[in-house]
Image (cartoon, rainbow, N blue to C red; front, side):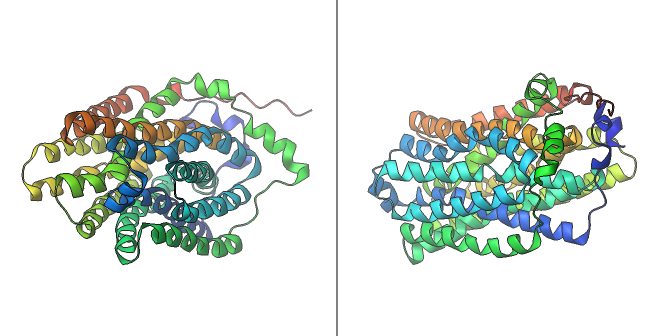
Length: 435
């Protein structure tokens, strides 16, 4: 189904902007974006492994509530800058903003190993969050410009390999570096190692910063869908709820899973890293397969909205098995459901993002809409660690935090079914006639 049949009026803005069939170089750059996301998530989640280390907790004198606040600090600045970063990439391209921000977050990640106070630790997390705010709006802006609808699920699935393998690799790598050296060296090494990525990025990606003569037209297209129009769309509000519910679970896993596996299930730091890897590798692989499968169904004539919604709802339902892991007394079953529930959510991953950020959204507004949606994602990153830490503190165990996850997963499935409707998507005005 053509995009013009999905969102009424969409084709009236940018006739030339219909994405062409992706070239091999586009797939190579997509892989590079996925690696960039992987590096971002390694730098983002390495703090979680450190928070499970007694010497780190003792050094900063952290309580469970303090650990929740430290885990969430990244998302304070990350949330604040999502919409501005979406606005920037819609107008100034992907390469230059991404390059500047990448250098900044790698430097701040490395500097985290040098701080000696809790205030310094939080400041470094704020800087990393601010700089990484560019990653998602820029990546989806680039995907929207270079992949057509029948490829978007696969493209997003491949990109999400970086998002999910980042935490999968980050936990065991951080644990190994902490054991081999200490937590300080872990931050310095992971922060500086990522800078190697800049070389292929600078060589492979064309500069898409608009020329001065083209800036007026670029700004006109980027402003075709106003912020007010976006916020007036019931579909956009539906995507905010769905993104919050999806990410509440994933951010709980990124921030509290290491501590849960060590403290509640008695795993060593090495085994914790291994099972964290299995969980995030599972969601990454399922996300890729589900995105590819949805693309094949759409290519055979399936309605893009119906197909992707079916995958998203199925993913939320399977993720609800997290409650089984919370209630079992068996270590083996707890570890099984820990992996299975997060892996099952992979059915929703690529298809939710393709649906909410590509299929239903007018092309000129992808960066801005993604920025708006990322505020909900960031809010989940703020709320999940703090609320889970407080629930852990008042209940003395992880069962209550997991019950709250179950509630949000149910809300996410219902919202996908009821609110993600094409007729409620943001509309773009008819293009003004040429003078």
